[in-house]
Image (cartoon, rainbow, N blue to C red; front, top):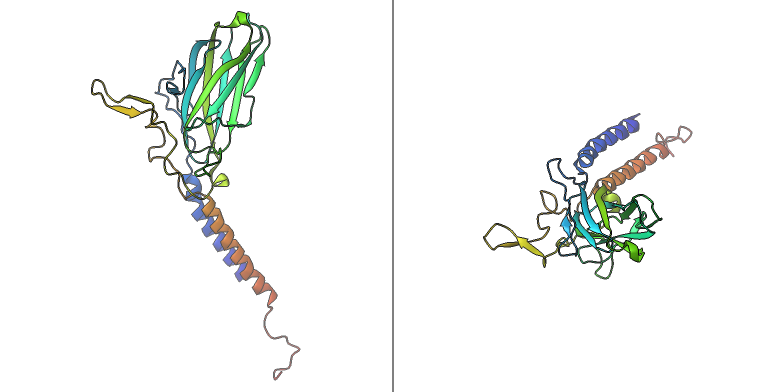
Length: 266
């Protein structure tokens, strides 16, 4: 009975300790309802239109154009990029492709999702999706792992007939993230997020000062790359439970003391 009470008290204490850690896990950032959704797209990496996660961006263009958007992604997030291409009623077969690049302009592979799709003659909108790998806080220099910082979305047609070239199209893009947390945590951290420093824009009217594009992206407290994750909480819980299991096993196997059949002087 005493062992049962000890185990119950320890589990209750661990539950109270892990509760705040679970509550502190922040969901993926989303745009506030008051933010105006972007209605145009850039034509290159340097002119990519900035969007926040959870924000639906629209743009008008022509078949053959390259449409670019950019968004921030932080450690522990698994971004999902979705795009919809609205074609004119009468069109030939077209193949559209959605590509995602990181802050070093390295193309990131999709875990799953249809990043390339072909629209049949006269068919409706083209739905594209790309679920990226979980953003890591640190990586080897030679690896192509996704790291915290700016990500670029490029939407373009890769195959179409000559009669459809230059025809008007409409596009919608939205980025959401799932907070994976300590399940994908790694030791180490990135010194600085991968944000562009070469592309600049004016910081104020007439003052001539400039600031890096996307320099304000990220959480209010800055980028979360660091050594801490909820993996430490569950590691500590596992260690305490293993210790309690060892104590309980020892108490159960040692018995009540000296066997009654052994003479006192033995």
